Length: 183
Length: 266
Image (cartoon, rainbow over all chains, first blue to last red; front, top):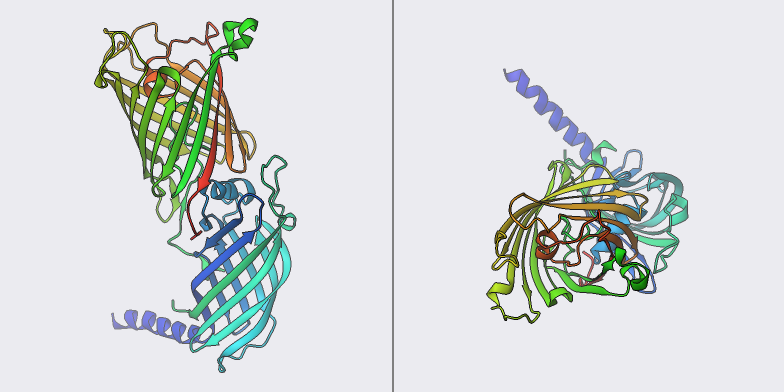
């Protein structure tokens, strides 16, 4: 009986120990976007994104549930999901990339970083290089990045029949807090 | 990639219908928190009035309505119809929201309660209580696919005084309504309100309506054909006198415009 208990416990501890200093997962995140429009600015916030950074190979993955963007105007939110993002068909926006710079987490401070990878929005993949800054703290990381998304790049159609014009470029701001990954 | 998946994620189906009405009747939708919908509705006269009346377009009734979301589940609303100078007040509460993911709910269920009072002068003059009616509905809907949604609306209408004294004061009916999306921004809707037999006069017909919905930015336009002139539940469920077969069809529209009073997106 004992060995049945010891083995899983051992695996758990081993996993925990090895993962602890390599993997960082998001503990808090805020993704927002903004677009100036004549009648009413278009802005929304999403706090439900998840992300992992693997320090051993500097891989970065971010996954954003599209339907969780919260708008002030709920009809706008409905249009965003139904007409523009088709979020039932494409529920997630993702970024899979690699951080280009060497990371040294032994020194706390703020570093300029960039990541090259694939940005998938509305089911359409685009090779992107995104830059931002990484704040290294004691056992925590904060990744901040601001980048622009061109709607045409991701085949997001702007209807001809809309009363207010929608910008073709959307500015996306991301702030993700990481802590060591715990299984 | 597996690590970033969140097993507690719940996907609430949104936009089972585009607006808070299927056509005349309420849909399971409510307006969002601190959002206000202003709805302007018109019903023109019967198409079979012919060319001289320009197929009914020369005469019209209207209803002006305001609806407000107290939170994302509860909304209140009021309206004023020119037909019988009716004021109506209602509240709607989303009991269940169709969801998938960690919480799986197959249906959306919304409760509706409404009160309406006629204020048109009549001879003899009736008391306020005699001019009042109450409506309770259980709205049950399912979004079967991106394009197709269906709703059943068991309804109870109580009139303190029916216009025809042999009519039941309390009438049981059930509505069935659906929408079929044509494109991302347009849909065809149909709605039928069936009154269970032997409750109201045979001259009254069941309400049947079809509409074409068009949504543009902050507006939803519903262009519709219906056999009812009135737009409150008592009027279109229990007092419809037009018949589709004889061409007593009214052209009409609902236009809704949404305003947001939410200070910050959160």
